[in-house]
View 1: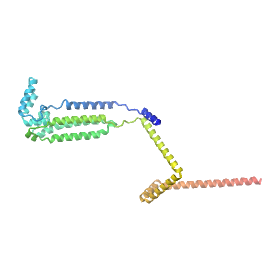
View 2: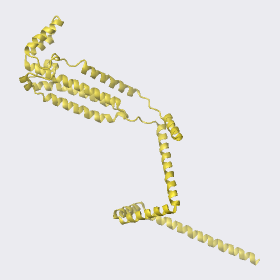
View 3: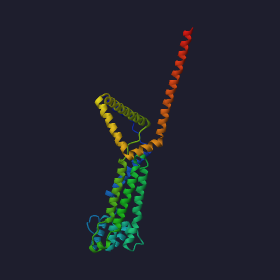
View 4: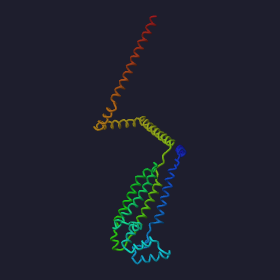
Amino acid sequence: MIEKWRGYMKEQNTKSKLKKTKFDLFVIYLLIGITLTQLYYAFWSPPPNMFRPLKRMPKRNYINSLREGLLRTKEELSSKEEILLDKFQSLENRLVYATYGEEALMECTYCKDISDYFYFIIPTIIWSYITMWVVLGISTMSNNKANMRTYGTIFLVGCGIFELYTLSTADIQNNKTTGTSEFLYCTTDFYRRLAFSILCLGILLYGKAEERSAMETIYGIIRNQELIIQRNKAINIQRTAVLRDENLRKIFEDFYKTRETEDNLDPGYKEARDNYLSENGIDKLAELYVNDITKMKDLENETGFASEIRNTGESSGSSSQ
């Protein structure tokens, strides 16, 4: 336990957290700023909607009441408000206002058919997604957030397709008959900004394990090597203990003999083994090894025989003297 505690403390001391660069801080501030901006526009500054207090499309007589209510807060109406109130006399214009927003109703000069209003707001919606995609690319340039680029792109594309599909399938003709509307433009704008905020928070909070410094990498390699050595020693001790015991040694030998016999009976194993031996030249290496041992043995015998003859000659010479 003491050794483990020492190892843990050593690891904590050698572990140095990488400092954030100026670019990392820029990305953090960028994501926080965009998140707060999107939440502000979603909850406190949504698109203009004069019919927001109502739960259904107002009738024509409500427009007169709306004009009177605006005149209570100001002396006279602006030219934009006058034009807007005049357009509200038509139920179709009120439905366009609720479905595609004030900008489409007021600024689309070429719109004649209802589908024209939808095509008019497409560039604005797509541009908001392109802007968010650029932010996604900038904020995921670091290695620890690179994985979020793919997921974020899929998320943005999915949200964009769903929003455009929802707006394109809005049944204004049916609403014109029933006189009801769900204020689709404001709803989609709210959820779009909420989705952008969630994406920014996800990028901000997500991060892979920080890259280790050179010293941390070295200490990690050393710890792994020490672990391998300790396990290898344990295996050797276990094998030695097994081979020292007569019964265990017999079981050990019988097991591997049985295993070798079973492997030799398997044609696939034999083919793989022969291919490996032939590819790596094991047979030739074994033959060379045996030949070297034989040559060394012959040389040793010749050397011993020569020394024996020399010793015999020396002993004969000394005896003759």
